[in-house]
Image (cartoon, rainbow, N blue to C red; front, side, top):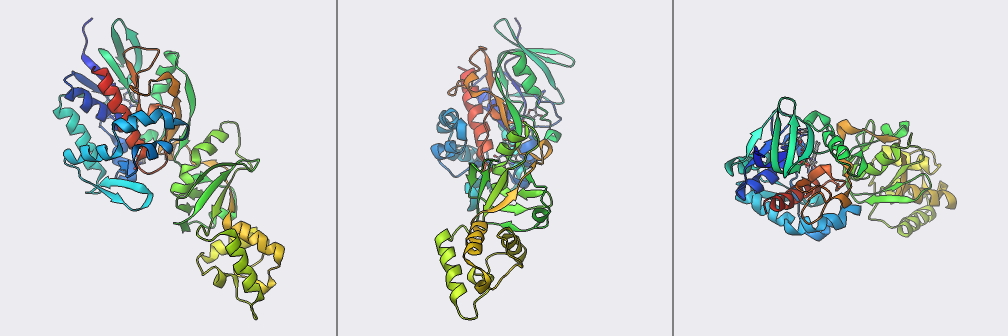
Length: 417
Ligand SMILES: Cc1cc2nc3c(=O)[nH]c(=O)nc-3n(C[C@H](O)[C@H](O)[C@H](O)COP(=O)(O)OP(=O)(O)OC[C@H]3O[C@@H](n4cnc5c(N)ncnc54)[C@H](O)[C@@H]3O)c2cc1C
């Protein structure tokens, strides 16, 4: 059977561009088929157009952030660690810089387009061919290879690399097309849900706090039985919809999964408004304040660390009126409620802003369908799946590009063996 290329890569996103560059550099003929008119749309949009392309963490620390995917992603991250991704970009003419918070790495130019162009040029110069505005409709095994069906033609290859992404940010071309192909191939999937997306709240008092950001905080997600489902020490921002910022967005996949079963009720995010002060220390400070003659007001004891609107919300949740009560008026049980509210202001959440605003997809091709050392689909020789198509997602901080590059590299190398 005549083949159009040794390797066809479906999707010219972060993973597809990386895989195409690696496979072409290993001497294979490579054809990349991309639905939209350009390569790397999400790379261009990423990190506020600055592209947080990887992390300063080592491979094993980074793997831990993938939750249930830790064991799966470990070999890929060890084979192509974040430090090596930085070195490769440097070699491509894109030096990188670290940002102190969240272990982030950006191009020194602060321009996502430099990352996209470098990935595209690496693949093109190595000899990969690109077909743009070409949506794949169907893939199927075909003798000793694979056939890929587009609207107006069919293409044949020996090895098929699937990386069409997930369903998040559909405006960039990712509308979940790959899931139908996986279904046709009889492969198990975990229902995809939007992730790394702001949370919504129906509570008016929450949306009235819009604009308040807490840079240093710890957030905990509680399910309706009050169990802590996840926690993150990352900034949060109150918005007109509810909560945003890395802390809230990192929790969102759990809320989105709960929403699959119906309306989200009883879920709360507990925000530690004073993470550097322990419960007992705070309680004692309030007791001391209440004993002082003439008694200071709450804000003095808290060191005026919290914006007045937030203090008022904390006091309301503790059953106190006003935003800054004099402490001699705060009795023991109110003091306990106040400490509870300061260390865990409960924000009711009603859902997420959904696919349009989600940075990634959680869920996708079940990891046990894929070899973690090669990204080969176990039940279909010659087929590889990687990037966001997999049931694998990390928190904010360059982890998702890092996973896309590392899984792509393993797939391309194995496909070229
Ligand atoms: C706004 C935003 C900001 C982000 N910021 C960051 C960040 O700073 N750091 C970070 O690590 N991650 C970030 N992410 C997440 C990151 O973009 C993804 O994790 C990553 O792009 C996944 O790579 P991928 O190649 O698997 O999928 P994608 O990059 O989504 O690429 C998939 C490609 O396949 C194409 N395709 C889809 N269907 C078909 C079809 N039928 N036929 C042919 N082609 C098809 C799509 O058009 C697309 O080009 C961000 C995401 C968004 C939306």
